[in-house]
Length: 534
Ligand code: AHR
Image 1 (tube, rainbow, N blue to C red):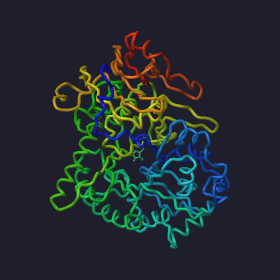
Image 2: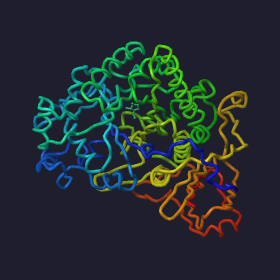
Image 3: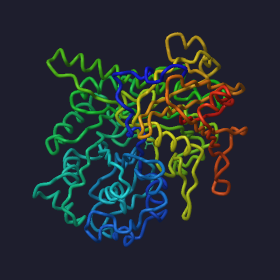
Image 4: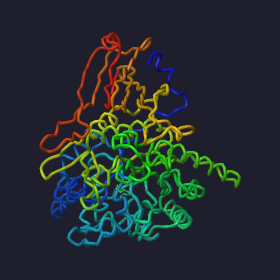
């Protein structure tokens, strides 16, 4: 940053949208029951009914919802989550929304086929909307395209958004005691319909036919909604085939992508540290390098462009379809299997991998409309709850800094870092034409605040043994102070637990910009992450 940072902003790029830090709640393990509502198994009907009692549209006392988790997830809370995706995930493909409305004591218990559990239906559409109202998060609902019907989907939308004197809108009024519609703008057209694990999975051709039909009907019910077509990694044959048609009907196209260490035993060499910290750049390399997250966003955007070009020859107007990165995270299935509700204790190395993810999302922000961390509580999440407390995992801290500081500003064009990793997880021959994962992974933005301009810089040093000096000078730029949040541990496997919640937390240093320059910048230690606010 040795030149005027304002000149490093790309003039045509939009500002970074807060929706990059959206969340995801699935009926899985202890996410809803235990994380969102008080009781790990099922909240007493009375607890949840209180939220509907006064008919004011506000949750009275927010009874039934865990206030500690709300305080963290709320838009004005610690993590400033702008949007929540619900109810799945795989769960949604066997979810019938009508089971989850009306008097709680009448709701049926159902067999749940994604995770082989029982769904009590104590938390349904109206509870989700209450939760969103109470937290200020925008709702994003995923439709059941597995066992759900077209008619059910249209009815769900009408139940939520209908304003006329019609059956479903009136049923919502009766159930909630208020006239106001739920106003759900974002709707997902199914979850991972490509996957053999998905109940009712489809071929790309069958999915496209169905999704196009549903999109037509849904937009007749409410033309103001935004639809998300179901993608795969963003760079697969499925994505190509679906986008060729759905670019005309969807507003966003989803990508799901995890750094899955357990999964990648086949195909990726190298130790877990390398696979994790370079994860978003090299997933499943060297066999399928194009599946890397950063590359996938680029390829998905190109597929959107290509579909627009092809359709323009048929006389259609191109549409600005964005990527909806609606599931991302570090996830080791061997540590967090379905049997334990996907509860993963994230260690220090996982946190470094997670920072690589955050850097990718900001770097690629202009093509991403929404990104939802999978998931927001207990299930592969930065937050773990017990009946009377919360543990903030290692990954919580970088997420908090990004969601608070890495938005509403413009991306700075930083020089590429020359030292690239070419170890066993990503051998040199693969790198010739593809992404080169640098040891130093940087992203920075420029934000105009009330008190002037501010630069936020995230530096991930993935090198296992070497430190790196961040040498910043601010000539011609009015920067007067520097705040550095450093995450460092000698122990790569360190975790935060309920007993030792502060094992891995940021070390914060504040100094003046001149002190910062005088000391010749800042040393980002080997295998560590530092976040700078200038
Ligand atoms: O987030 C956990 C699961 O991962 C989701 O249910 C599914 O969509 C994905 O495979």
